[in-house]
Amino acid sequence: RMRLVSCLLLALCSSLVLGQEDTDDFALGFEVMVMEWVGSILDNSTESGFYTEFDSYLTTELEQSFCFDIAEECTDSEYLGCACTNAFKEQGDTCAKMPCAVYKFLYKELADILVDFLADILAEQGTMNLEQGIEILGSNVYVPLMSIFCNCTPGIYEATFQCIRNYDGDILEESGMGAMYRVIVGMLDLDSMQNIMAALLEPHCQPADGVDGENFCFDKFAKMFTTWGAMMDNTFKPFVGTKSCDAFKRVKSEFMRFGKMMDSPNMNVKKILKSYVALEKKIMCNSKCQETMAESFYGCCAQNVPRIYKEYELVDNIDRVVKNIIGLASMGGDMDTKMAEQFSKKEIRKFLAPANPALFCKNFGATNYYRQIKRPVRC
Image (cartoon, rainbow, N blue to C red; front, side, top):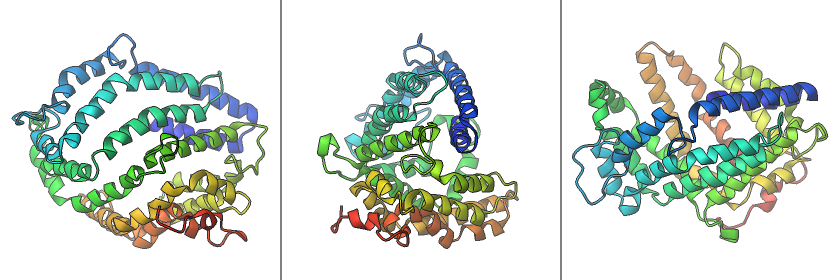
């Protein structure tokens, strides 16, 4: 998965820097790499559509753990564990059925969706159709999974972290890692992690306006992802201008600067963050493109995000988790405690600032389109 993500970033970089012929060659190479990767994980001769070993693992190992009988007492669970099983049961029948719903999606649907995704994203040799590919993933992966998760909120947060705190899957003791797992988990700030999970998931589960069947914000966000894919496609097209608001060619210098910071052997969080903020401002706040970006990405659901982040004290919780993890890593000699200084609350606020473009873009242009379209009442 990381190879695919890296190649998408490289593809954007190549379209900004290389000539069209070189970009076409890159797209063709990307196509070959994707097909090789897919060929290694999919197999249409199995029931799940995945390669034989994974298909067997799904049917013989995972199903029994994840599709438990909610009416029976748990006495043995190889992978999910009875602590997790009971944690989901405590949240009611809907949440109790959530692990099995996720398993069934993975087993019965995911492989076919990946096949369709690749058929669309690589519809023409040497080209990438990210808009259609992302629309398939949004409609057929993101939306169904978020529907499952959102039907279990807020119980999913408590159940998930009860699982982590008290995990007792048989596989843990069989691997000999039980004692070490409990020591590590005992040192983690799980309460803050739970609040982070809630802050990041909750915006997707907010009610939407119900237009065209879009009853939850994840329906709205799926459309935003597709729009982003269309902008990525436009970035590869030679006839789309370098100043077009519907492509990312206009952020060439900022993107290159950000990429250089990320690739530096001496990672400096503050410098990376500075280049990231400059990139986001060019994308979102440019006075000539701000109206386009606001109309595409700042509907009511997006406007909910800063409020939810504040309600769950996201900055404070990230700050506590970062310090917690760096402190544990430094105990083992793997990280200098001075690294925590680069992850101050100030830097965390800068990183999260683009989530509130009405404030983030306040000093750009005569009109702040994010403020202009913002509704006067709570969404």
